[in-house]
Figure 1 (cartoon, rainbow, N blue to C red):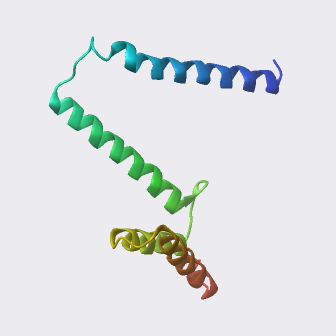
Figure 2 (cartoon, rainbow, N blue to C red):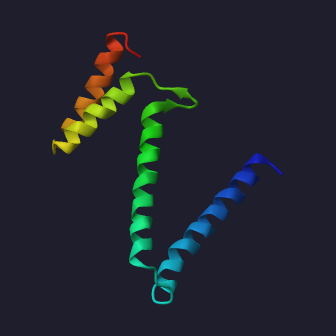
Figure 3 (cartoon, rainbow, N blue to C red):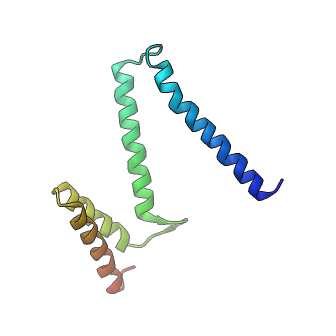
Length: 107
C-alpha cells in the first residue's frame, strides 16, 4: 500500500472515530450518569494531561532537553499570566527572556 493511501486511511479513521466520540455525548447524555467523584477525577485528569503536554513542549525538542532558555521564558510567561498581564505582554516577556538568555550564551 502506498504511503499516501495509508495516510488517507489513517486520517479517515481518526475523523470517523472523533465524530463518533463527539456524537456519543448527546446520544448518551441521559442514559449514563457518573458520580460527583468521577466527574471531579475526570476534571483533574484533563488538567494533568494539559500540564503534561505543556511541560513536554517547554522542556524538550524532539528527544533532547531544550536548554535553560526556553523553560525560563515559559516560567516568566506563567508568572506574568498569573499576575494577570495582558496576553501580548505575557508573550513578549516570555520571548524576550528566552532570547535574552540565548544572547548571553545560555542555551
